[in-house]
Image (cartoon, rainbow over all chains, first blue to last red; front, side, top):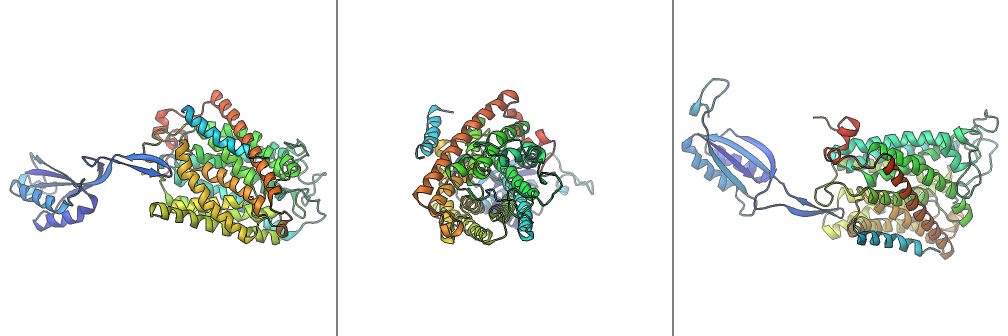
Length: 112
Length: 439
């Protein structure tokens, strides 16, 4: 099992969600986050005073999938979240030791 | 602060003094009887002007600060309202409107002595407004004494200790507000002596508070993170509600300054409307031209600037004059807020100086040029203009010097700023033990 963490542009969320649903991934955890990578911040002016915007709003999607589906899921997220411009985000893939469905006590792949 | 910056600020203030060569609320003969219509309008105006501070100004300023400091602004407005009322009853009314001193009144009306006539039993007695009880006049003027120091809050928002704010305002009322109320409206040096005119408070309210606010903001220093961190308003919705309340309340401020329900009140009401509406429109239009985006904050700033500029002129200028005031209000304070502030590098948090001091100055000078004799007996022209210019210089210098003295006294006695930790975390939770928006 793999945990796929994707940091993407907020307006791409619906597109990514729909694309994942098309390959059978229905569950996910979504968080509104702020951060920066290569895009870095930029300077804005408000009423004559400058300030630096370091952290840009992004969306973090967390999905746990069975090993066989991981590559497909990463490919799907990459394709649907891409704009080609700086700040499109990153995807991290981590191994998962176990998954437990609380309602039924199922474990491992059955609980994903 | 760098020496260059000090020199720049000094040069701007110095220029205003160099180029320097009331009547509205002046005393009328005691009236034998009460005029119900005038009294009704003055009672209404008094309530309207109080409404400008609570909740108008409190919401306007409250919306413009960050979420962690919204209550500090509300508490400052509330505290100033109580403090000014107490002082007004004790000595303020007397120092402003009793006696015929050149700079300040006397103690003849302390604790509202003589408010109900020489015998203390004539509730219809009036010595300042013909046909209106003295109690109504005293309360009308009190609402001005409340909003004027509350305006200062805008420049020093988010970074001054609550106790220091109230201590400063106490000194400021004594050294700046009461003297100017007397000098301009109470028969003192500026109104009766020089002959400068100020219908509703361009000098007494906006310039006195605005120049003092700038000096206090400079002495305090900028907010932590100023120029690096985002310090945008936490609620433009509150700010807009506050602006609208200010606008409506301002009819009491300006049309109420006619002192009667008459043609002059109607004219002041009309000029106030024109200037406010046009000021807001022009400010936002400039934003549209420069940044391609007219903002709600731009509309609100322009409306308030329009109201400020028309304040000294409201009962002297024609509708066309009011339109000129409105256009000037949308342009000159706009450049002060967006460019002058950046150039000089001070942190006038909510633009009290840029809108009120600059707007009050522009309005006071325009009054000297645009006054129409047929409206209120004052003829605009170079003679009146130079009287206005002299009054601008006096208010500017007096306010700056008094503020420096009071600010340093308060700094030595109790300190001006909270600790860095308190300021970072926010004044609400640390100074008032509560939050504006609970989870």
